[in-house]
Image (cartoon, rainbow, N blue to C red; front, side, top):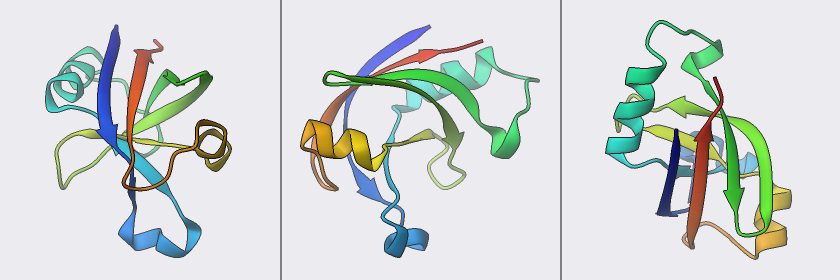
Length: 99
């Protein structure tokens, strides 16, 4: 299962000093991921994914966000630097579920 979407980068308010930056997956993609991974439990409800932003690709996890009901994806500082992205920018993100 693969998704491609544009999303704005945002900083997690609770960890502003650590500069944790995320994008939020669309509601429809989040619902489909939740459906396909029902019963599979990992730490913090995370789901393993392969991600591409620009020329950067990596494996990581997406995490459920109880406030929005969607999954959120952390974007590593190295990726943001390589792709010239910062909080407030919009990036095209490709996510593939790893099962």
